[in-house]
Length: 216
Image (spheres, rainbow, N blue to C red):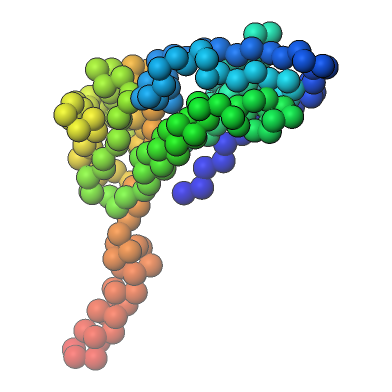
């Protein structure tokens, strides 16, 4: 299943002269991207920015780190349960000093973990199979709701020890949505088994009729 993350629209590129720079701060401190970072003094590790691309955000864009002029440096983009991250300033010393900060490697590592988790969560499965949704680092005490293809809503109880959701109600064919406190968290779809495809059933019926005709 291909998911396309729409990046913010570029307005203009802004650069500062001389030794001037923009300072930065984290806007969403409770975001799962930052909660597991083993950094003692986060403020000292945040970058100084000398230039960035000013962008126009949409509803599915959430600024995670911002410049002191209010413009975003790091943006989370969500679509159909998938997620992506966008820096408005390239990871280049001519643009910012993030490449030499101890903050960068743990941040990128955490991004990879989250992206892999999201990819795992949206993988399709066969009708009737159990679905596991990883919610590690999320608000596990949230109200978790599954909306089925037929618009039925089912309350889900997390596995608090392993920080996962086990979904067994997958008898319907189509797209399922998982919500946390009313906000879309993830989506996945169910597919027919290759042995259940209509074309195979039709071919099987033809073979059966031919066999009965020859033996009748």
